[in-house]
Length: 459
Image (tube, rainbow, N blue to C red; front, top):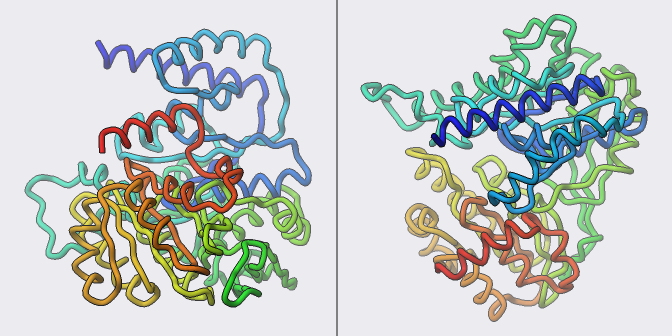
């Protein structure tokens, strides 16, 4: 019965989304990747807004979230009553919502290799004119392990990971391999998994990255970080400068942000989208400087208690993103450097290797480490605890209480962890100097507040 109900609801949402798109008939820019899709969405929208009316997907990258977003609807608490409200509002939206926009910029999330949580399903109702494939990383590998035959043996954990990464690339890559000849595929030349899959597209293939050789493609030539403060660092004392080359022109995009080097790929992809929609190289760069904003929980900077600098990357965690953040923290002159790391979830059998690789990088950067969750206790704590002051906690509430009492003056604190029951944004909230900044954190709203409260009570 539940399967039948789910099938009916998904069909209803899918058909309604297709009708709404048929009414408006926008160009569609579809975005995918393992890390950084929401930042890419913001960057692409920032560039395109200089010339077009742009709608971007808001808190929506799934089989239910995207159709509702197309209809201008968003869940409040995911209760039965909330879903009933949404279902009843859909006909109203189809009849009366005729708001026009030129381009729909949409994240396409792939959590599993099977429908409805795969790319194949999303492409049933999203028909992109431009597909952007940003990267592939070991994220959701636990779900993709379903593709491994029970009798299949791997000679090493690395071989297993390679199999999973190829499977992830294959599924996410449908965004570009399913495009028709008159469409555009924009892909990261520096990611071997992305580039390999992209060779199968029939669409116009546009690359970006450090390794591009075609002068008509966006080349990344440099990333530099600047911090003007020394002992005490304020959020407004940082700059990241990206340098790009296109044809014979060089452009510097200087942002008042502190973000890892891999954000160069995000910005290069956004510039490439702009170029393919009639926005000049110079205009695209200026638009990023003026309009690009980080989504909550992705390397946002806040003033913390005891003159600390909080680097809030609490939305989620993977090896690629975490190591990028650690490399960036190493460039911050503040001392001590405190790393708060929650479990990296949904990794399956490669969880140990992924956490251990992060632990080795932590040793290069940290002065003190706070760990949260059973996976960090099992895989990270044994590697670093004899070499660094290390404290492990069952949950983020305990970690926050400890830091409120023991955080040293002038610390730079990096906070990172998976969203699945870890909720390291709780730690950021407790360490904020200005409580008005709470509204700028990730996972706000009634639904997430209930989730945190339930978990806090359970712990």
